[in-house]
Length: 187
Ligand SMILES: Cc1cc2nc3c(=O)[nH]c(=O)nc-3n(C[C@H](O)[C@H](O)[C@H](O)COP(=O)(O)O)c2cc1C
Image 1 (tube, rainbow, N blue to C red):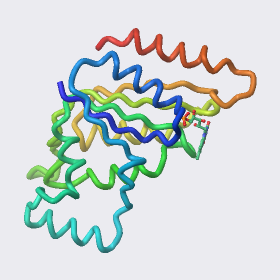
Image 2 (image 1 turned 90 degrees about the horizontal axis):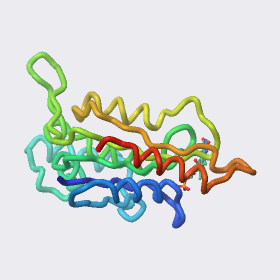
Image 3 (image 1 turned 60 degrees about the vertical axis):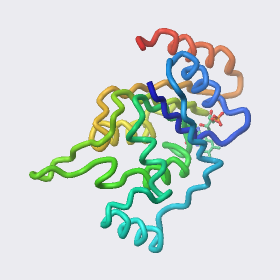
């Protein structure tokens, strides 16, 4: 089992990372980590997009620009760690997505224009923690939509802890409850 861990946490004591590490300790397999705060990916711009389009046109996927995408398509399980920021997730995760969503590598179009996934993974775990309580989550909702369409992953699972920045809340108890939910997952 190849597990790809996409870490979009941004703090040393990240609660999201604590939960993601707990989940990873329960999964069996080789873990490859992509720590986005270390990669410092830049959003695609005119220059990088032109370079990428030229490489895609020549099917030159050996360029390092495609390394993350190649790790993504080869993984059996994907674990995304993303704190809830501004109703979704940190921009570095969106930048990662821009970089991996490469036509001809991660997905392709069929003869009738249908999307055909080129990813191996069947399960994606999305781990998040939130300062408050949020009925709208454009973070997981967005990743789930991508997984269901481009990545061909129908089994998407959300692990979340809410209310961590509410004064008076028992943070340890909230994290413990989330860990119990992880314990109860049918891996
Ligand atoms: C830039 C930023 C934006 C945030 N936006 C929200 C938000 O929209 N809603 C919310 O409930 N909490 C928000 N929070 C609080 C975080 O979701 C919360 O503190 C979370 O537990 C942080 O995860 P971490 O401990 O892994 O860093 C935000 C925090 C930061 C730093």
